[in-house]
Length: 202
Image 1 (tube, rainbow, N blue to C red):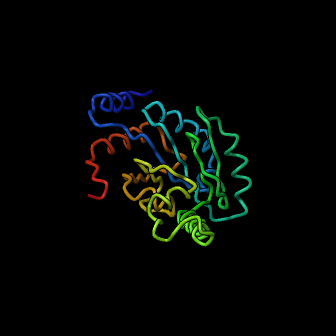
Image 2: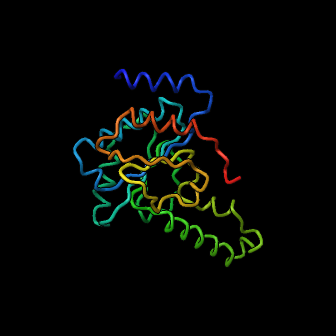
Image 3: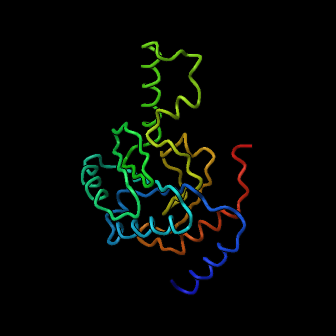
C-alpha cells in the first residue's frame, strides 16, 4: 500500500460514520475486455470486505446479448473471498450470496418479472390485489438487498440497474475507468460516503 493509500485508510479509521454494509459497482462488458479487468474485480472484492462490507453486488451492462455466455463462464471462474452467485439477463432465481454478479439483468426487466409473478399470484387466488405492496414486490426481485453505496465508473450516468433497490442508495460517480480503478479510488468512495448525511428520502 502506497503512502497516499495509507493516508486515506487512516482517515477512514478515524471517521465516526459507519462504512457501507452493501456496496454495488456498475461496469460494462467493454470494461471486462481490458487487460487486468478480472484481477481488478478480485481486488475489489478484497477491498470491500476489508472495509466492513457484508455484501457486494456487481452489475455488468451488456450491449451484445451474444457476449453473455462467455461473460458468465469468465465471471464464474473469478477468485472470490466469499460465496459468489452469477445471474444472467433471464434469471429469476434470487441471488442471496455475499457476492452477487449480474450480467445484463437490468432493473426494468427485473421489476417487470416481479410484477408478472405477483399478477400470477393474484390470478391464482394466492394473493388479493389489496395485499400487493412494497414487500410483495421485494420478495420477487432477483436482488433482494438494498445497496448502501453504488459506484459507477467511467462516466456520470445512471444505468438500468437495481432501480427499485437503489432508490435511497448513495451514488458515487468517478471518471476513473474500471481498468484503472485502484484501492485509493475505492477508499475515496468510502470517504465520500461517510461524509454524507443519509436521509433515506426524508
